[in-house]
Length: 235
Image 1 (cartoon, rainbow, N blue to C red):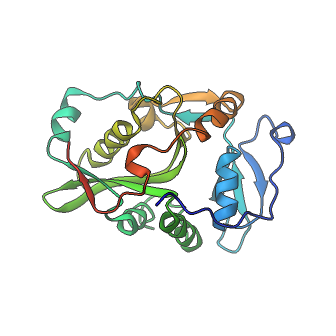
Image 2 (tube, helix red, strand yellow; image 1 turned 180 degrees about the horizontal axis):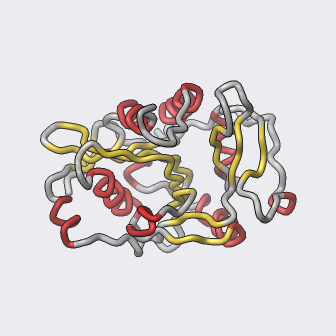
């Protein structure tokens, strides 16, 4: 079955021409209902807490957006060797992945109980997916994100074993590489030194928003349409 469309949101996000050109934070408030989240991603926004759990949610569109070109992933020789020890799976342990990403012992953790609940619901509707790196029957690392057409909006990643999150990213790039590869968008929100070492580049907000409509109208990658459960995609 294709992803299930939830009821539309009553919230209206401001138009891009009203966004502060120097501020990543675009709006505050609304809710985390499935329809609200899908509307936000389609507008180039994503949610992130900006204070204690009782505070309103912040909605961000980075002025300099982190994007991984699908032909630009940097894979070292040692990483390629390491990848041979892992299996890539899709959606076989989503709840474990989001819980590992949201481990409160991690620095700068931002996945609150409400965020967790919201993305679990989107996962059940078929809009959010995990890409997992397994080793000897153990979940060693992974990532999750929102898939809408040709957009994959990465939310978070984790590892329990060396290179496991990088291998999961390699697996994701493989899944997104098809005849529509030139127009697919792999969004990682912000570029960090670690992500830059893997090939993530910065794009202007204007350029990102310009690419988004084409990406959103592409078909989902085969791995996500219909949502794949319990499938082992061995490298």
